[in-house]
Image (cartoon, rainbow over all chains, first blue to last red; front, side, top):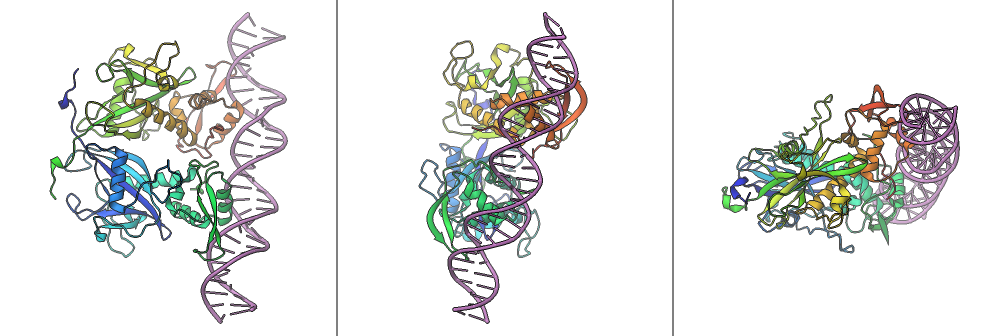
Length: 252
Length: 252
DNA sequence: GTGTTTATCGTCAGGCAGACGACTATGATC
DNA sequence: GATCATAGTCGTCTGCCTGACGATAAACAC
């Protein structure tokens, strides 16, 4: 059977981004305000169409750079840092997910250290970091008791999936360091885990565990008192990507 | 900015399936022979175009049924069984992955108990279960020393990703039971783990562990001697999907 | 019966995790 | 400068889980 272009329906393919960071002890995601229908004026995840000559990962990295200015961390350059972590999350293709046409969206998950301020085409009012619980409580009320509309499209589901991926992945991988600046203390790393999991962790057991896991942390020799209290050692992320033994998320 | 159909390039969207089963103590995947170019005559993963009104999961379930006759296990019907497990794996969209046109493939992973014989449009010579190592050793030689061509497209990568997903997922979920018939013994379940991981496990420790993990196995009361030796208790899969504590894959 | 195979129960030592006490080194406050 | 609050770091103890492995049980083949 020869190739017949009419044998398959045409799709639009987009990438959507779940960009997570930890700000003020809370797990936050990047949201942008939609400037056009459908869902005009509603908050949504950043994203856009995949171009004709672009790989999916390239498209996601391009969108991430456009929205945040972040460059993607390249694992082949170990010294480099402060780039974001980017990985494919899942693909969403319900026929009715976009009322205009048939769109398949390849969602990606990005983890970034705390950033200055978001920018979306230079207009700050159209992009913000919001705590994920706030974005996920559909139709509830935000921190200042203003009404919050649910995210556009199926983005609440995508965000929930991304958050769950991040929560489980920092258990057995060194991904939590992607939320930290290039040099960080054990306490700062612990606060990342606490924010992502939404629990309190014992500082002493956490310290023992994280410094005892081979390849997780490399001491830089420096110290800092930026958190107050006794000066703390500074570390960089070690080469290990898989943690053995893993960090264990406390009891459900 | 109004909706402009020329603003995005059209894609073809397909689903590809990594269908895994355990046969004769080896992890095997379903492969079909391509009847048309490109890669005519080469082995590939089963798959096909997503239809205009179809969800991605629906398309994958349809392709699975067409290739194997398997129905997908519906978790909302706990009593039912012997259906296959199906989940989305990842999406592959390199611009050059299909020489004909721009194709984005949403790969799915299916786990099935040992089946009679594969069928691909009724032609058995065009579908087979092959050990995954055989399919992955690109350009090597098969069991009977016949030359083996690498899988078509990027299907070797997709298969490798699917196998790795299965290997890691049976660690912390009860997914290994998807490889077993509705009722099975601890020994049969152990042979599944051994085949998927490619290791030997201590029968005594495995028995203790698997029967001690709450919600993993439910005794049916029956026994069987179909494996020879002393009669073994029969179990069904329990309701638990996440294992706590997890099964631990032995040392690398 | 003897041997073989598989299943199942027990024992023991080592390692890791959670709970928590103790001490250290800084900045803030009086 | 003494005191306090804050964070960081090192230990201890106990219980649980794991891996290694001995022992017993119940079927089948000869």
